[in-house]
Length: 245
Length: 179
Image 1 (cartoon, chains in turn blue, yellow):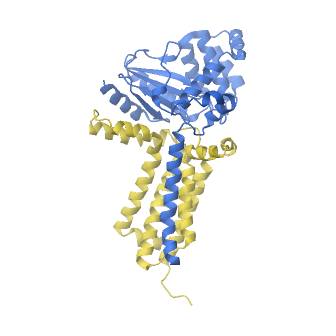
Image 2 (cartoon, rainbow over the protein chains, first blue to last red):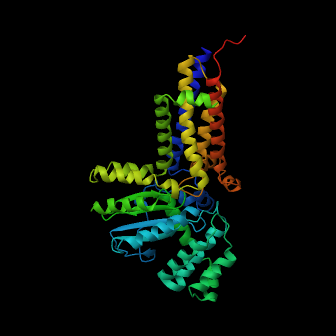
């Protein structure tokens, strides 16, 4: 009898492990899940959170001229990436996405960058870098945004180790932005709501970490892409989606 | 210990069992973050079977891009060690018609569970650990862990390794009646 109990220990424990994983998956996809970014939202926007949809990629905010886009806004496939300048996986994925937009015609694939700074993991710095990138866009347009983003991902030490007091002014100078105007923009807080909206949209579409991407196909079908997937996977996915016209 | 390992894994069926379990665990960990996407792609009737398979296999490349060096290392080790653990459990139980002690079972499974909590792909952090801590409203704790939750994966490897060594020793020890 006792030995029977012992024999059952392994399968029972494996089942428990399976339940833990399944629960994690279930809760991570439900609207009531806990998430590092969402925790911040809970603090600030409890009323709005009650109305959040169920984590469908179809809830991705439409791509507009206000977005930061590499490629044609009417491209057949749009990859909307929610990213954090302090995230090492976003740094890797940034390189992958640059490779993708180099490989495909701008009419075929467009890359849309949205903000998803994970405040609990990268306090202060991730948000500061997100604000700085928005100010770069305000002062220098879409090209300046991408110059800032590319350079930021080159210089960031990630995981909250970046010396933003040095790196941000350095990039501002390198890309030729007006320093005073940049400082005014940076201190104004006028992009806080926009960034918060991006964070909310990332969470609403199912983002539970960064990088989180929603791929929008030519027929409007949306696909979730989680994490810094390799170039081959992103390319395969694009080719599949392009074939699904 | 080596004698015990050879005793088990020289038998092809136990090597296959260990390899199969390791592959399943590894695939699960690597593909899990994109389960929703995989279901969507695999259930799409317009995509060819070959293209679907190519996409699935391409996702295995994320072990290089979506994991840190430490997490990729312990992910592979956890998969291999857990496969070895199960195969050795099976061998020991079948050979001796006996049971492996509770402590060994607990070590093996504890190692897997700990390893699962250390899965660090797809985001800046360990997504299952993030969820689990979030359940208690303590996601901020991850920021205070020196390796951002990867400690659990390393602990998993240590537990599984200890379990493998202990079972291997039991297997290689002579079968005698202790008085």
